[in-house]
Length: 356
Ligand code: PHE
Image (tube, rainbow, N blue to C red; front, side, top):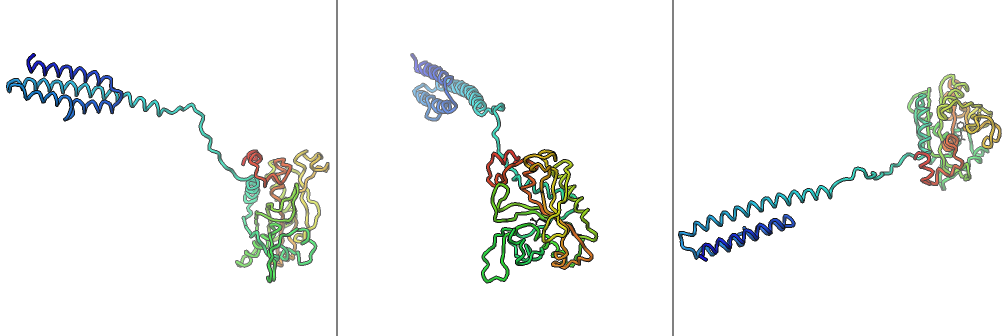
């Protein structure tokens, strides 16, 4: 065989072998390696070209064309194989990344307000709608605001009934304490009004934590109260009863009957405890209301003239009503919760049932 024919045969078999390998290449990387192997500077085609030097000069262009043609065939085949593999790779990727939209979503648990806070918000919102302004006072109080100014002087028997937590305030004239009720906010709000050179009318709602050394099914050493009061000219017991009636019906979301029962608080005169028709038996009499059909819900009365005097409001011109209620107690009645301690144990099963 002549030299040129042998070269042509070599090229032909190289091309056949390469085309076979291109078709079998498993991925783009394998194809890239084949490209280098065949068309690269040190590739197979180049080594065939080395034999061209042995040819007589007139035959060289002939074989040159032949080599170029082979190159063209191989380059084209590589390109096609690349396209096929690239398409396969992208299909595989799409398949792998496919999202199953029918899978159930992951739940993102959401927190909520504690049932006591929910109740407190509901209650203060009702008073805010009636035009009462929000006020606040400190949980650590002095004896003046918690007792003296509320007409509970030292040695007054009412102090004993408050089961007060005192701080050890050695050397201080006045002991500090955890407030036993929200009534000191009455004093602070009236003082603030007078100090600012203002005068009544004053209509205030205050809510917050109070503390008493007491613990059983219906008592917790920390609980919440809402305090409401109004001072103006000609404020009467009828105004008190009207506000109570509206509030209690709004909170319990039904027309609840109410009654005022004479009682004693040092800071109100007259004083009354307020009962509502039992929400469990609809006023008929059951175990919870002990057959009476009534349930006590809060303490109230007309602000004692001594209280107005203590803050410098003229009690011959102004009068007022006040009441204070236990938030937990009202939430328990509204939702039929049997044990006050459930509020503070933070058992999520209870909290979830209460929508928290
Ligand atoms: N402060 C009283 C208590 O805690 C409730 C109350 C407030 C009574 C205002 C009358 C007027 O028991």
